[in-house]
Length: 134
Image (cartoon, rainbow, N blue to C red; front, side):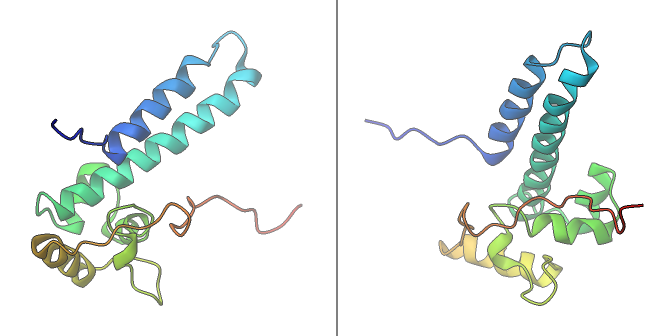
């Protein structure tokens, strides 16, 4: 019996975004906002996971992945550190994945020792926090 391949993190995030968008009623903007926010969070996750896949499996550079996603190179490292594929390779001091972390992950993948982050230990998505309440 052939083993069934589990869906990729990108496809799971896209499906979750689609599900959130199904609940959006454009005629009720206030009710739509939480669903739109959820869809945005899922799409952000899909972008991050796609960038991780591009740099790890396709050999893309961090800079190229950022350009393709419309991000600066400096914005990519912290986002890669939140992905299932590269969170285990983040620099312990900075919470970002660097080019050396990507190289190590590629080597481990080639050797069959690639480490994936647990859902419980993976960092949560970044959120905006106001500096003050005024």
